[in-house]
Length: 435
Image 1 (spheres, rainbow, N blue to C red):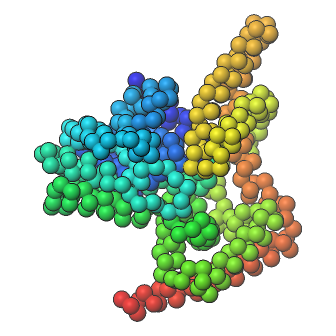
Image 2 (image 1 turned 45 degrees about the horizontal axis):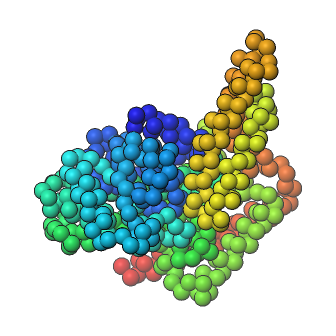
């Protein structure tokens, strides 16, 4: 049952995300005795993303309140999830409440099983990692102290180009594999050492900022460099973003620093000009255009159009429902928007498909009814392909801006990149002299 459910959710994830990239030190199908520790920016989407893209079976550790949801309880039990009672969910929780959980996880690890945990303890909206809890370290230390050997742990970074938007892109990046035995200690000392190492590894995998303004600035500068290098993949953006973040830290001074302010103002001005023109940066920097191999040809899209049009009409109402549900229930908390959208979609779309098929057979004659039912079921996928096609600004807007405006944007971009290059050269020179 677990493999069937994972298969269903792999398909669901492939629909929800336009693209999921998996990079880094990816585990093998035979990996065992390992804790995977991931950052937690996107609610229930985070564990689903890891579990459906991991080559090896992994049992997630999840907050106990999720077992109160009937459908989720079935899924969690099917994949061997371990419930943990959190202090925020039960203020009266006794100190020993999770002892059984720790013992169960330690036994699972010692027996060659794998565990997924989110050591930050909670999904959040911060532009950076929050302080890691010691749970992963304590679980591994307990298994080690009970005689298990060969245990490992690995950080998993999760990044999204728009975490609360349907058909966005996601990145799963695996950090280095760490051996528990290499720490050469045990008990509480081992738990602390693991927690510190895991925190360091996670911070190396995700792009952070002290504030959301700083995080946005880092992301935009990373996009500028990635587009110039022709590396628009999520992995490319992540790698360049971490380099930009390191350079940002090397600047020092924060928003009170004159160089930082100059960069922030120049970047904001350029992106404001892009917004006014209805363009993205990769429309101006042609090297950053979406790869042709990932775009459907015009001929293929034309063939799908007769199916996409009824799909857009028939499925317009259910397409709006997840967005409306998320807007009502999330209440501005961006880290759970995708969770509500995904959950609502899993309920609404199958029901709507059943209604369309039933109506086809009730109201249409036999020769027509099966064909109409087939169109009702298949048409939303054609409509989805057209949605992706039309969402690409380069395909939709390239000819919409006068050449004089484009020339002005290209000139503005060139001046901005010259400023960034000068600052980067200065940082590299200081680093070389200090070394």
